[in-house]
Length: 331
Image (cartoon, rainbow, N blue to C red):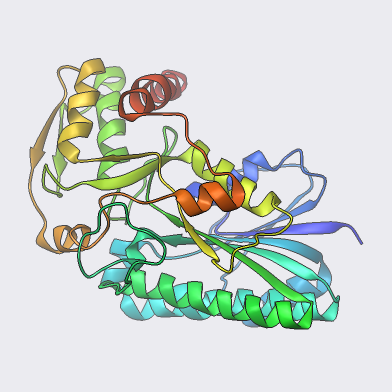
């Protein structure tokens, strides 16, 4: 039977980009999402379903020889805050169903199913950290952060059990900072102001859009970010490692760390007439105040060769702004 890769949340920001990057992979791809797909890749099976449908999830693992899982289906931080019960159902119970199905499949086939889980800087709290390490005190204050931490620990526990049994699940995770994509505008996350601001500036210049962005986070709130391409590269890199020697299963990564004020100052170099106004949303600000202003990435560099190539200025001027201008000129 041909090997297969399962991508949940395949229509989302990361899932869709990862699926696109996999088209040269000889394995069959299974794209699972609650919404209809907008793509039609070769050797890809599209399934419209929820990760909470345990019976159908088990059928997938029985029907296909799934050797890798990339699990992106989730409610994001602000959406989870508004719907805590649904967040628990999807982010926790749904994730456990996927992990358990992968574990059972690995045990049945006497092999390991590689499992990637995207965690988040939301696991940190209750105070803002500088250069946060994976081993720092973790007490998340949001339902989203608690969801992510629970699955980090659940996956790590199942990983250890699998190692003892020499079969099961090979669990790997990255604690993502805010992700900025020149192709999509996110909604429902605490760090969304950065990509939203960038897209608004491009739409203003190229599409006669609004010349002002309303930011709901204070001007001096510093948070870490990574570009979508480096996020995808990092996922592929950590999953391509034959083995990760460290007992650590969740790793920190970032490219830059910036405030809204620093972002708008950089954007205005290219879009000088674009402006920002601040209308602080207390709930959103209270969440951002518990997340790290930067991350220590030394563990990821050592264990699976994570690396970055941009500084603050080049991240925008050489990467994001040229790509976002090209995106809106084409669309």
